[in-house]
Every structure is written in structure tokens, then in C-alpha cells.
Amino acid sequence: MRRTALLLSLAILAAIPSAANAQQPVGAVAPGSSSQVVPVQTTLALAVERVGGKRATVLVGDRVRVRGVVGAFVPGEVVTVRLFSGGRKQAAKRQAIMPGPDGTGIFELSYRPVRSGKLVVRGAHEATPALGALAARARTVVDVIPRSVKPGSTKRAVMALQRRLARLGYVVGDQGSFDGRTQRAVLAFRKLTGMRRTTEASRPVMRAIANGKGAFKIRRRDRGRHIEADLTRQVIALIEGGEVRRIYPISSGAPSTPTVLGSFRVYLKTPGTNAKGMVHSAYFIRGYATHGFSTVPIYPASHGCLRVPVPDAVSLFNWIRIGTPVDVYYGPRPK
Image (cartoon, rainbow, N blue to C red):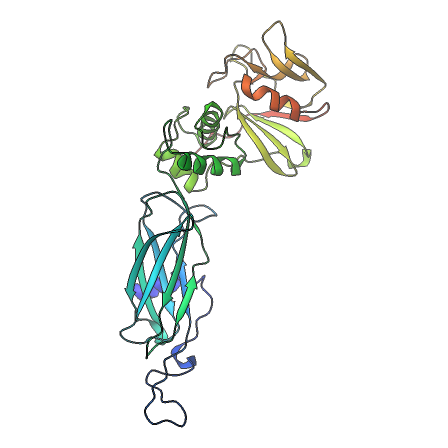
């Protein structure tokens, strides 16, 4: 059963020649010689266990499994597997090649990465009298991200968080700084995934990121360059070319002064701060607008507008054009 599971896990590898296809069998004698043994010449392939989402992603300290196949089994041979992060070798492990199905050789090992970054796996076998030199690199590069990020975390850890959030469209702050803007990106991520609405990039947040969660699901792809406001999740998304460009946390209308629902277009933009404290307003119907405000709670609290934090108001205002479509709706409850 164990060997059958191993074959299934290595389905992504390139076809491996069987022992019958090796250039020379073990102990083969070279033509014209009665004593010279020719080493077997074959292939080596590696696979790394994929963890969650469309990308191979793990948290620091999670177990990564490396599996390998040698095209022809030769007894007593060893492969060295080296693991690199940031171009630096993190570990080297020697694994004996064991007999596998159909005359192949197999090996398996596990590793727990100790730092965030791109984990590259390489394998090699130095030539011996019985088996020729082998070398391979796993096709999958594992993205290792921190177990949690908070003020005081290393720049490397913060950048790993920012990179993954930005990939989904969340607006992060200064590179390597767990600043207010990055914390608001974490808040927006938590809102979209149905987590408690805080700015803490805790282990559950990092695990959700590793598992490929947190993507904003576009509802109106037919609207082209437009805005979608999901009042259930209390976020706003700027969409262009069928992709989410930016995601901001918002506070929409309180129950007593709800935000109007429907499809609209921006008809007026007023820069600066008005008498009501609205900063850089973009009106989409009557007095309803997107704008910055001094207080943006985690729940609906406005007089009907879509509030964003003041530091985000300028970039939002500049992205919006007269005529930009705005779609306001209640999305399904996060699972």
C-alpha cells in the first residue's frame, strides 16, 4: 500500500525510464573487456509535497516531504538532498535509495523549514563504480511564510505577509513594515474570510493564506473597470481587466441609515475635506459617496456612505473617474 501511495504522489514527475531501459545493467561488462564494470546511467526526479491552494505553501516549522525516484535501482547507493532558501543552503540530507516498483529506486525524507522565503530542493548522486552521476531539482518551489506576524517581527517576515496579501489585491504599506496600512490589509483579509475583525496576523490568518483563501470573488465582470462594495464583508474592491486591483476595509451605512443597494455610476468628485468631515468624496447616487473619514469602525456605522480610512482616501479618489460603475450588494455569509 505504501508503495502504491508513493506512485500516486509522484504522478507529477516526468516519466522515468525503467531498469530495463537503463543504458547498462548493474555489473555490465564493457564491450571488448572481460573485467571492467560500467556504472548504470539513469535518471533522477524529485517531487515536493504540495500544501494548500494553487501554490505550494507552508508555514515556518511545517513538515515538507520530499520524494524521489531513480530510474534504475542499484543496491547500496545514496542520494544527497539539499534545501536552499534565499540562495543559501539550509540543510543537506543523505538518503539511501531503496528498491521501488518496476525496477526503480525510491527515497523519501521530511524537512521543517526554519525561515520564510522560497524553498528550493535539489538532489544529487556522485558517480560510483555501480551508478553514474545524477542531479535533479524539484519542479515545485515551496513558498514558506511565517507562522504569525506582528509589530516587532523581522522585516523578512513582514515582507512575506505583504507579498501574499498584495498578490490578492490587498493594499499593504511600506515594504517590511507592519504599519497601519498593512494592518488594515490584514483586517480586510479577516473580513473576507469571516474571521474575527482585528488587525492581528495570527497563525489562523497565516494558515488561511497558505491554504489559498482570501480572494475577493468578482460579481460583475461585465462592468469592466468598476467598484464592488460587499456590505456583508464590509470591504470595497477596485476591479479592472477582470482582476481585483485593490481591496480596502470600509464602514457602510448603519442599520438606521443604510447604504443604498444597486448599480450606479460616479457623477461627482469633490477633493479635500467638506463641512461634514468627508475626505475626497466620490458621489455615486444622491448624497451617497465613497470617502475618507476619521472613524471607520469594523461594522456598519456611517450615514449611508462607504467610509474608508483617511490614509486610503487619496488613492481611492484618484483611481475613481467620473462615470466609474459602483455596485453595492450584500454578499453571501463567509463560510
